[in-house]
Amino acid sequence: MDNTVHSALIWAQQELVALPSSRLDAVHLLAHVLGKSQAYLITYPEHAIDNDTLDIFATLVASRAAGNPLAYLLGDMSFMGRNFDVNRHTLVPRPETEELVEWVLAFSSKESLRCIDLGTGSGVIAVSLALARRDWSIMAVDVSAAALAVAQRNAQQLGADGVMFIEQDGLLGQATASILRSVDLVVSNPPYIAENDPHLQRDGVCFEPRLALVAGNDGLAFIRRMVDEAKSLLCRQGCLVFEHGYDQAQSIATLLYQAGYASVEHGKDASGKQIFTKAMWPGG
Ligand SMILES: C[S@@+](CC[C@H](N)C(=O)[O-])C[C@H]1O[C@@H](n2cnc3c(N)ncnc32)[C@H](O)[C@@H]1O
Image (cartoon, rainbow, N blue to C red):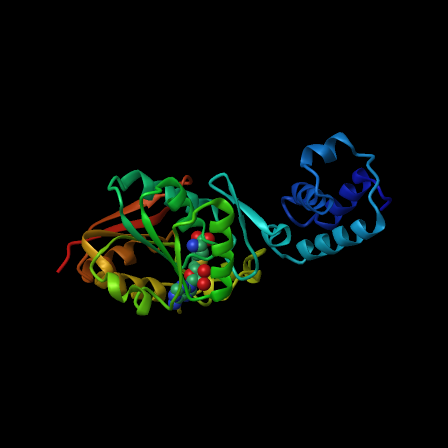
């Protein structure tokens, strides 16, 4: 390639030809290394790029061609209109999870609600809820210290000062011992993929933390535990709401009713898949 924006983009697009988003990814990566907007690249195709910058660009393009998620290479990802830092310790936030947050906001009218986001990862759910509802008290829990560091940075950068970050395995531990039976809402995008699911080999997914994705041989191990543990934390008529696989709704409804929950409801994403479930804990 020669050293103009135009030829760098043509070269990168060819390198990324196996990806459906080859042109867009090339533009994102070049804008990123140049520290310019995408509009700048279109306006100034003859802009000359120095050799060091071209080398960095070539390395990123090779990484993307090898399957590394674009979000990891750029270091951030948009979620509900805000930029969140992400890295290889956090799941790349998915657009469906934006719909989970919207669903939670739509049915939660109570003020000063106490909420726990279990498996916060980059903090997208906890931070988005905190910014939408300043009067909520929100705890963001994750077992991964490295993910929590990213979540904390996001909260700070986006001005969600009130969120409390807790490193804990599951819902029950020292940090939550004092709030038993007083939590109004447990929300989660848990790991829900079965160990042998071929989706784990898909573009990008194999670069994401296994801890964030895999939950036993049927994908329900984490959800079973969360359903059980949430019973000790939720107040009377408190709510457990979470995302899951498109084919798990039925099994999840069964396990929620068997555990004593009531009013189980499923929510659909924009493509019509039942990937959200909400259940009420009657108390007792
Ligand atoms: C599917 S990711 C969700 C991340 C983020 N909430 C999102 O929607 O992008 C699941 C998260 O659960 C965390 N996790 C896995 N096992 C856990 C456990 N036993 N206790 C707490 N968090 C756990 C992972 O570290 C990961 O960040």
